[in-house]
Length: 271
Image 1 (cartoon, rainbow, N blue to C red):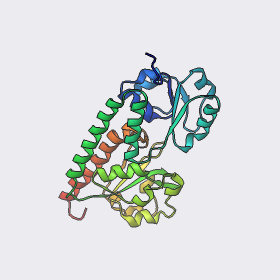
Image 2: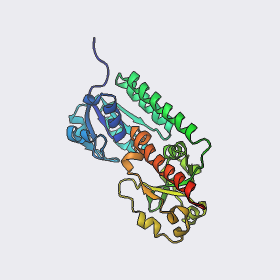
Image 3: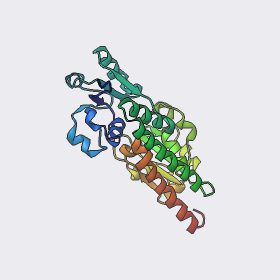
């Protein structure tokens, strides 16, 4: 019987590569993004054919893919060029936890691994339910998440939801509903000061977070997170890729920071 599943897949972003490895379907991958770091094995085994907003179209065509996977409007031009060249392309647009889980199930089905994907999703949902119960009656720190520093951009929806799951309160939850980064810009730095975050988490997409630069901003020394040395980094590969990484390592790191705040708050008056 002929196998109609895609057997030569190019992944233009990291999260689909990571997921296919988790599902045991990595042999289908013939090309990956140059920004891929998860899993590390992929960089050793697979040719790199794209950045994020650009790609080596001729190199992709040489790989003869039967499916190319991308993410968001940022890769629309790449997708359009490949479609014009006769390549099947699927662009995901997941911006929330539910949409990430939907992507996982959809991609699992696309490669004949729907059952494995369902097991992964069920496991995450069980963990999420346990976290909601764990933090139901516990104090919740106010968390400011910074995705970029110039201009200041706050976290996207799945990050905001992970903060809530980890027992925190996103200081800019209303901004998180905006899918485009330009609509999550904090024009007035004083607004961050006024919201008094207990924890600051930085993940500057594509470059190292510099906490000393955040602390040095005018007036930010009065923010509780700065006063209490609660300014942390989560690497962008762990939190800003809308896939398994964010729902595992990203969530675990946020949880570690909110748990640390709760422990300190319980032992230090006024924190």
